[in-house]
Amino acid sequence: MIIHWLSSIDSTNSEALRQLPRLPSGSVLAAYDQTAGRGQRGNSWFTEPGKNLTFSIVLKNLPLKASEGIRLNYLSSVALVEFLDAKGVKADIKWPNDIYVSGKKISGMLIENSLGPEGGIAASVIGIGLNMNQKEFSRLALATSLALCTGREYALEASLEEFLAIFEGLLPQLSAGELTARYTSRLYRLGVSARYHDLLTDEEFEGVIEGVEADGRLRIRDLQGRARLYRFKEVAYLL
Ligand code: BTN
Image (cartoon, rainbow, N blue to C red; front, side, top):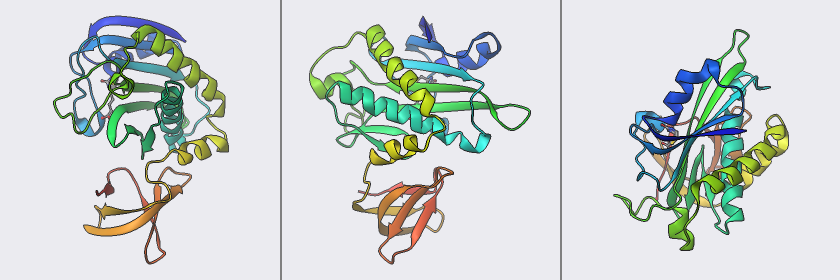
């Protein structure tokens, strides 16, 4: 993988998409400062300049059909929790791909795929924001960083290389069943009873997360024994 460090850019995902035809697979664009970082659901992704990792990985010619794009989320999520494991921090994956430590978000990702003529994923831009050294957040109750978890400071360049080595090591598993098992085993609230809000029926219920379907839907077994399947934005976690 080849890392290009940018001092400042609107968004590494936007830049990777603009440069996509010229960037070989395995290119990584990393920024010390993002002026218009993008998050999920059209939200913004704000981080203090120079403190955190904000980067986008470009992958091309992937062995995935469009319907299997969720596996890129699995791979990136597993790579993130395994990177944090190596730093001594136990993180969970809040389905589908937010990374949490003790109930606070430490990392999020925005994956943007382009489809090829035969319905495969021709290129993927995997944008990751990972809070490293930032210690103050405007909504501290909701966010954390590696430095807040361990009390240490981290070199961004070396940390990105360490993360990418883990990510690259997992790439051969992109199509393998074991990746789903590794992803599932790290799901937040796996196997424990908790409350959820079904956003399709506007109903609250208690259930247990059992895992994910092949198409990436979350499976929650409710108290009546019914398996409920949800796509992104169809269910909310209640406290
Ligand atoms: C989320 O949790 O809402 C997703 C956040 C994704 C942020 C990363 S930072 C690097 C890349 N560039 C962007 O503009 N967004 C992603």
